[in-house]
Image (cartoon, rainbow, N blue to C red; front, side, top):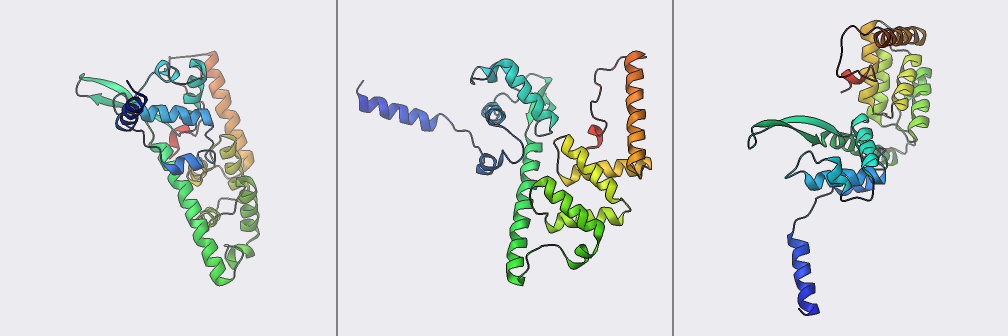
Length: 254
């Protein structure tokens, strides 16, 4: 076979053997949502398998990558723990049985939220230029010491300016009688969990409100009580459980 025909045959096979669609926004922003290069490649391999095999085994993924079985297992665990990837049950009508599948919906939600933040910032900058303003915060925001402190704390922790919508979230929390101390503590716990979006922080605050916790001291006392109960369960198990939550906020995260 001549060199030209080999090249032509390869080109045809290359372009007609199928492609995997990877959003440009994911490739340009995966670092911002805490995904490293190897985790991204794991996600790409899952996308590659999605049509025929919605739940590829770790061995299958390892067969195409330079990463080891245990490294890919760790990557999947981190993606699931950070709620960027979920495992769902589905009914297979061909095999007439239930099976597992990977869902990238949480990853899409995270990218959508990041896009909304960037778009909001862009609009705020455009408005600021038109109105000859530097800060997107309203005068009433600047006149409120608690609001000022929270905006400064959040911007320092997130490494960017807050959008108007995020400032409105802070104002709404303060108006709901959540103290500056409580909101800052929610941010600290969110950062410790590697989750910095406002939906997660809101879920933490609402859970504290439901339990009637209004100060950091009360929250720490509740944490100590929760920890002591967990230790008693370990020392004196009354019944077996197939799954023990590692994070008491896991069940109400939106």
